Image (tube, rainbow, N blue to C red):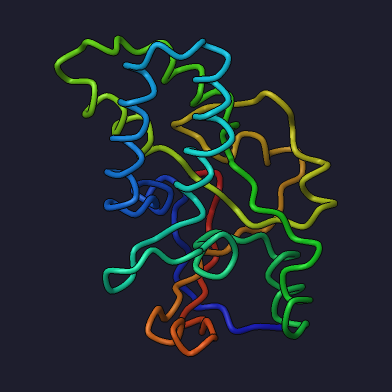
Length: 194
Protein backbone atom coordinates (compact mmCIF):
# COMPACT_ATOMS: atom_id res chain seq x y z
CA UNK A 1 0.00 0.00 0.00
CA UNK A 2 1.02 3.63 -0.24
CA UNK A 3 0.73 6.61 2.10
CA UNK A 4 -2.07 9.01 1.23
CA UNK A 5 -2.26 12.49 2.73
CA UNK A 6 -5.51 13.11 4.62
CA UNK A 7 -6.56 16.17 2.58
CA UNK A 8 -8.99 15.19 -0.18
CA UNK A 9 -8.75 17.32 -3.31
CA UNK A 10 -11.82 18.36 -5.30
CA UNK A 11 -11.70 17.23 -8.93
CA UNK A 12 -13.03 20.63 -10.00
CA UNK A 13 -9.91 22.24 -8.50
CA UNK A 14 -7.15 19.84 -9.57
CA UNK A 15 -8.26 19.29 -13.15
CA UNK A 16 -7.79 22.89 -14.31
CA UNK A 17 -4.49 24.01 -15.75
CA UNK A 18 -2.82 20.59 -15.83
CA UNK A 19 -1.24 21.30 -19.21
CA UNK A 20 2.23 22.86 -19.07
CA UNK A 21 1.84 26.53 -20.16
CA UNK A 22 4.92 26.45 -22.42
CA UNK A 23 3.83 23.24 -24.16
CA UNK A 24 0.32 24.68 -24.52
CA UNK A 25 1.81 27.80 -26.13
CA UNK A 26 3.83 25.73 -28.61
CA UNK A 27 0.87 23.49 -29.44
CA UNK A 28 -1.38 26.53 -29.86
CA UNK A 29 1.05 27.91 -32.46
CA UNK A 30 1.03 24.55 -34.23
CA UNK A 31 -2.77 24.33 -34.20
CA UNK A 32 -3.05 27.88 -35.56
CA UNK A 33 -0.72 26.93 -38.42
CA UNK A 34 -2.75 23.80 -39.15
CA UNK A 35 -6.09 25.64 -39.05
CA UNK A 36 -4.83 28.42 -41.34
CA UNK A 37 -3.31 25.99 -43.84
CA UNK A 38 -4.93 24.79 -47.04
CA UNK A 39 -4.56 21.14 -46.02
CA UNK A 40 -7.58 18.91 -46.54
CA UNK A 41 -9.83 18.78 -43.45
CA UNK A 42 -9.12 15.06 -43.02
CA UNK A 43 -5.38 15.78 -42.76
CA UNK A 44 -5.98 18.67 -40.35
CA UNK A 45 -8.09 16.32 -38.21
CA UNK A 46 -5.36 13.67 -38.26
CA UNK A 47 -2.57 16.14 -37.42
CA UNK A 48 -4.46 17.59 -34.47
CA UNK A 49 -5.93 14.34 -33.11
CA UNK A 50 -2.92 12.06 -33.45
CA UNK A 51 0.00 14.41 -32.86
CA UNK A 52 -0.79 17.75 -31.27
CA UNK A 53 -3.24 16.64 -28.59
CA UNK A 54 -0.99 13.83 -27.36
CA UNK A 55 1.84 16.28 -26.70
CA UNK A 56 -0.39 18.21 -24.31
CA UNK A 57 -0.44 15.28 -21.89
CA UNK A 58 2.91 13.73 -22.88
CA UNK A 59 5.20 16.72 -22.40
CA UNK A 60 6.08 19.22 -19.72
CA UNK A 61 8.88 21.75 -19.58
CA UNK A 62 11.26 21.15 -16.69
CA UNK A 63 14.20 23.53 -16.32
CA UNK A 64 14.01 24.56 -19.98
CA UNK A 65 13.82 21.00 -21.33
CA UNK A 66 10.75 19.28 -22.80
CA UNK A 67 10.29 16.15 -20.70
CA UNK A 68 8.12 13.11 -21.46
CA UNK A 69 5.41 12.93 -18.76
CA UNK A 70 2.96 10.44 -20.21
CA UNK A 71 3.18 8.28 -17.08
CA UNK A 72 5.77 9.53 -14.62
CA UNK A 73 4.93 13.17 -14.16
CA UNK A 74 1.22 12.73 -14.83
CA UNK A 75 -0.82 14.08 -11.92
CA UNK A 76 -3.93 11.86 -11.97
CA UNK A 77 -3.89 8.09 -11.40
CA UNK A 78 -6.47 5.48 -10.51
CA UNK A 79 -5.78 3.37 -7.45
CA UNK A 80 -5.28 0.28 -9.65
CA UNK A 81 -2.76 2.03 -11.87
CA UNK A 82 -0.85 3.50 -8.91
CA UNK A 83 -0.69 0.14 -7.13
CA UNK A 84 0.62 -1.45 -10.34
CA UNK A 85 3.26 1.27 -10.76
CA UNK A 86 4.46 1.07 -7.16
CA UNK A 87 4.63 -2.74 -7.06
CA UNK A 88 6.81 -3.14 -10.17
CA UNK A 89 10.33 -2.25 -11.25
CA UNK A 90 11.85 -0.79 -14.40
CA UNK A 91 9.73 -0.92 -17.55
CA UNK A 92 7.22 -3.17 -15.82
CA UNK A 93 6.11 -0.13 -13.78
CA UNK A 94 4.18 1.20 -16.79
CA UNK A 95 3.55 -1.98 -18.77
CA UNK A 96 -0.19 -2.57 -18.80
CA UNK A 97 -1.06 1.06 -18.02
CA UNK A 98 -2.67 3.58 -20.33
CA UNK A 99 -2.76 7.35 -20.41
CA UNK A 100 -6.45 8.09 -20.82
CA UNK A 101 -7.78 11.40 -22.11
CA UNK A 102 -10.70 12.01 -19.76
CA UNK A 103 -12.48 13.93 -22.49
CA UNK A 104 -11.96 12.22 -25.80
CA UNK A 105 -9.43 13.73 -28.19
CA UNK A 106 -11.95 13.71 -31.04
CA UNK A 107 -14.09 16.15 -29.03
CA UNK A 108 -11.17 18.60 -28.90
CA UNK A 109 -10.25 17.96 -32.52
CA UNK A 110 -13.79 18.71 -33.71
CA UNK A 111 -14.08 21.83 -31.53
CA UNK A 112 -10.72 23.12 -32.82
CA UNK A 113 -11.73 22.52 -36.43
CA UNK A 114 -14.90 24.56 -35.83
CA UNK A 115 -12.89 27.66 -34.88
CA UNK A 116 -12.54 30.52 -37.35
CA UNK A 117 -8.89 30.50 -38.50
CA UNK A 118 -9.12 34.24 -39.24
CA UNK A 119 -10.39 35.20 -35.78
CA UNK A 120 -8.18 37.83 -34.12
CA UNK A 121 -8.61 35.90 -30.85
CA UNK A 122 -7.83 32.47 -32.30
CA UNK A 123 -4.84 31.84 -30.03
CA UNK A 124 -6.87 32.68 -26.93
CA UNK A 125 -9.78 30.50 -28.07
CA UNK A 126 -7.46 27.54 -28.63
CA UNK A 127 -5.75 27.94 -25.24
CA UNK A 128 -9.09 28.27 -23.47
CA UNK A 129 -10.19 24.93 -24.94
CA UNK A 130 -6.84 23.18 -24.41
CA UNK A 131 -6.75 24.29 -20.78
CA UNK A 132 -9.59 21.82 -20.10
CA UNK A 133 -7.49 18.86 -21.25
CA UNK A 134 -7.18 16.23 -18.51
CA UNK A 135 -5.54 12.82 -18.58
CA UNK A 136 -5.55 10.02 -16.02
CA UNK A 137 -3.33 6.96 -15.83
CA UNK A 138 -5.50 3.83 -15.76
CA UNK A 139 -5.05 0.08 -16.14
CA UNK A 140 -5.97 -1.49 -19.47
CA UNK A 141 -8.96 -3.16 -17.82
CA UNK A 142 -10.18 0.17 -16.40
CA UNK A 143 -9.77 1.76 -19.81
CA UNK A 144 -11.98 -0.93 -21.35
CA UNK A 145 -14.71 -0.17 -18.79
CA UNK A 146 -14.93 3.60 -19.32
CA UNK A 147 -17.92 5.05 -21.15
CA UNK A 148 -17.39 5.94 -24.80
CA UNK A 149 -18.35 9.30 -26.21
CA UNK A 150 -19.11 10.91 -22.87
CA UNK A 151 -17.44 14.30 -22.79
CA UNK A 152 -18.01 17.22 -20.47
CA UNK A 153 -15.15 19.70 -20.10
CA UNK A 154 -16.72 20.92 -16.85
CA UNK A 155 -16.81 17.36 -15.47
CA UNK A 156 -13.77 15.47 -16.78
CA UNK A 157 -14.69 12.34 -14.80
CA UNK A 158 -18.12 11.82 -16.38
CA UNK A 159 -16.76 8.76 -18.26
CA UNK A 160 -15.60 7.30 -14.93
CA UNK A 161 -18.92 7.45 -13.04
CA UNK A 162 -20.05 3.86 -13.66
CA UNK A 163 -16.60 2.41 -12.90
CA UNK A 164 -16.21 4.71 -9.86
CA UNK A 165 -12.48 4.17 -9.34
CA UNK A 166 -10.49 5.82 -6.58
CA UNK A 167 -8.51 8.65 -8.15
CA UNK A 168 -5.30 10.09 -6.74
CA UNK A 169 -3.45 13.33 -7.38
CA UNK A 170 0.31 12.76 -7.49
CA UNK A 171 2.90 15.46 -6.92
CA UNK A 172 6.20 14.47 -8.52
CA UNK A 173 9.68 15.71 -7.68
CA UNK A 174 10.92 16.91 -11.06
CA UNK A 175 14.45 17.39 -9.75
CA UNK A 176 14.99 13.62 -9.65
CA UNK A 177 13.95 13.19 -13.29
CA UNK A 178 17.39 13.95 -14.74
CA UNK A 179 18.88 11.16 -12.68
CA UNK A 180 16.68 8.61 -14.44
CA UNK A 181 14.13 8.40 -11.65
CA UNK A 182 10.85 10.00 -10.85
CA UNK A 183 10.05 10.39 -7.19
CA UNK A 184 6.54 10.75 -5.82
CA UNK A 185 6.48 13.55 -3.28
CA UNK A 186 2.85 13.45 -2.22
CA UNK A 187 -0.37 11.51 -2.88
CA UNK A 188 -3.85 12.88 -2.26
CA UNK A 189 -7.22 11.28 -2.88
CA UNK A 190 -9.45 13.13 -5.39
CA UNK A 191 -13.21 13.40 -4.98
CA UNK A 192 -14.43 13.04 -8.57
CA UNK A 193 -17.96 14.08 -7.57
CA UNK A 194 -17.11 17.68 -6.75
